[in-house]
Length: 450
Ligand code: ASP
Image (cartoon, rainbow, N blue to C red; front, side, top):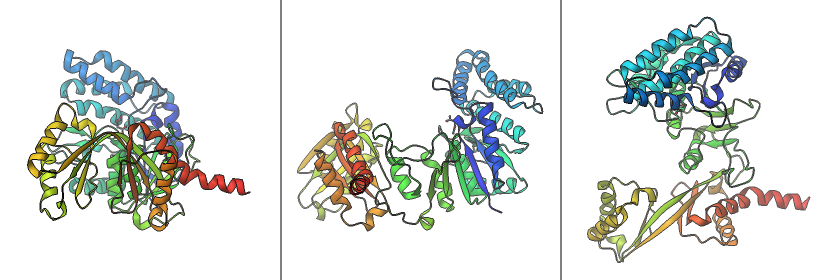
């Protein structure tokens, strides 16, 4: 039988009403056997997420030895959820008393923060009459803090093989010393992906408060198209550049297992959402460009040295300086006698840039070093680009028509992505120009012809 693992985010579970909606979604398809849940999120725009209340609670317990005052807001959130849902089989006050006591005893930020998911999962399991499976018993981390897949996958598979349905709290597991440890913020997406992989689900449904990915940032482009289908590779390029719906690390477990992800909107379940497919299952959908994304505030270090191509070890020496200084670079476009390093400007403050230039000059004696600051990167992404002749011509013509000076180009080797470096000030104009070229121009022409 088909098996779907669903993950619901905090806004989908913010109060009893939303949790009832989630219960309806889960019951609507018997293939939805396992649900991974976040802590209750915001109910309105200036509300506070339960996870943030818990971190606050941890801080006050650390400072004053008691979290009684800050725990009361958490208590109210959960008791009102239980009341709204009309759950009587569950003594929420007793569970909250125990939680407050444990927070005081354990004195751990991760343990405290994890209680939002723990309590919500217990309540949702009670509402559905499903089994509660604690993430602490099945998700493990290694000594170095990385997720322990060898240990966790068999345990999850084994534990869930005996359940028809289960609710599993997201965001946390157990570290190598038996203590509760959380993923980074938004990490329930990762937990959901891990569970989907462990049980070899057909599909990982990620339910949130938007109807999927958009082809461009809606704060910059008016009403951008929805992306219906996207490959993992395209998503990786776009989300690295700032298109954030899923936690960036959440794609790896399902991607390795060739399991598709579907982004769905809890508040508009009828919307198609975005389907994220592994390369094997991805079919061309006729679009040249799937999406456009970008980020501001990069610095480009441009190095020139004649005969660089025949100087063995040039790039290694430059990169080992970055490594020693603990600086990661984003891109490294190169020519015969040139090498550029694109680095996020935030890593180069407080004299770091000058030190880096000094170290590079000393190590490789370039003829010329130039620094370009306040650079934005814009990525135009799509598998369709490789097959359509003239895509880059269209892109660069669109930029020149918009009067945008291209400071750097990087196509990578995948033919999936063309990245341009432009001045920060041209960023918004650049996104609009590229979006117009690939998403609107054809439609306008067609409409005019009709
Ligand atoms: N509740 C956690 C957070 O707010 C984890 C999650 O929701 O995914 O970051």
